[in-house]
Length: 455
Image (cartoon, rainbow, N blue to C red; front, top):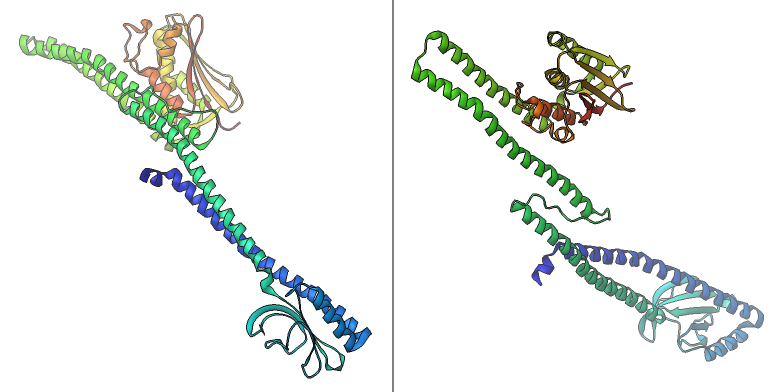
């Protein structure tokens, strides 16, 4: 029971019930006032009409005729239905159901709702006082208390409405609590499983678009990202251990051999140069990983600026043309977009294009071709395509090409650590785009797609 009282669903339902009761009371108060005012006005109007009819009888029949008419009417009406009194100029009662002129009746003719003395008891009445010719005075009134049962029924109806609202609120609180606890229980089970290391679990979602389902879908997307990051960290750790072991082992072997054999200076310096190359390889791996980590955090978005992609690709091709000529490879640039701009980090975009060109030149045989193109796949998008005539990749290899430290069969014996395409993919995602691969037959097409700006 204490848990039920502390339940957020119960608190929410109770708050709505109290708010409903308050709204009902605030609605009933002005309604009651308006009803009382309308009722009083209606009574005054009816009494004024009665007074006019009695004054008309006085005009036709005189005082004696009006006296007889009032006595006849008092005899026919229900007891206490009307207050009727006709007096002469000296306030002596002539006809009616009141023994004498009541104290508290205003001195001026008109309609009033006021307390007067009736049978020595203060009574709230609505009355119309009329002065007739010859000093005669006519009083027509009605006891307000006669309508008390109607008012009592009004407040009784309000109390019943509040009771119904309370019952509905309690039932609603129970139903809402059950529904919420069911959802929360399933969420708690999923979170507990994830805390125990089962990262594949996801929060249950329904077909509706309510707040809990929307929140569950958002959390599921976050969990997918976390699972990818955790697996990525594990894969990177394993890959780093694998890739660093070889150069560090070689470095240790060279240094140990130098220490034991004490070779001539020429051989010693050659071994030292090889050791420096191993150290450079290790440093390049760490630099690439640091750059990827910086890109993954999104920190470089703050330095985004407008970039002319046509000029950027043309300069990259111009830089690599000498290296392509040395390998007897035809490296060309084609602009198929007309004018292509994007908002991004110019340095990272240039590095991404350079990595793609460097990869293409590395795997293209002599006599082959490498083509760099800027295209506009559709309105509002930009594309950079690097196509080569090398051995290409299988569908399975293309699916893993952006994994860190992954190297396909064609890369065996070639320099590199398998981080170039990972960096290109990270840059593309930083731009809000993607890196895709397609079979060139022969060769491979690498396409960077991301949002374009300008015309």
